[in-house]
Image (cartoon, rainbow, N blue to C red; front, side, top):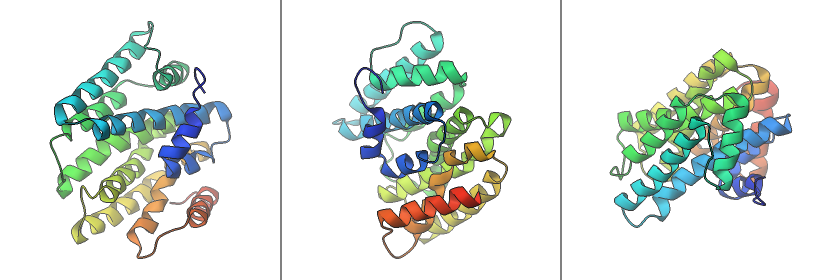
Length: 231
């Protein structure tokens, strides 16, 4: 929570699947830092959704790029709840700048892409969401193993595009299943404490199925994955 704003409650409202996954983070301080990352991701997505055109969206995303620059410059940052929470996470966990840059550039690069082909979707998902999962794994103490979280983030990015109808089709779903298999293999090398950074990828199974998964069903899938250490 920063300046009276409940970021945890906001992420629960706008990103309920990842919020559920974050409940498996035992350390409250680390959980709050991961929530800050998810709030940042939502702000970037929102910047493209509320803008009236691509130029306005790029201006909004440039604001976030400047905010990241301020954070890594080590001086005063703008008084935005998510920026302040991100700054605390970056400084407290010594997070690298490159993944933040990749996330923002992926969002900017997608502004003129109403629908992705398969290679484009993979590239966007890896840059935008794979980078975010890596950052979450770093917050959770994965260290040099944090890169093993990136494939799961890629799966989540592919799912976001599918849900938004910005990509899809039989070939896409087949590639998504392959991406999930890759994520499962990579996640086995993560420390147990960092596993919540990849948990959401297991929900791809429900999206690819023919029936809608209930909230209870999602909780059950996440719990099973967390307890078993398998996506």
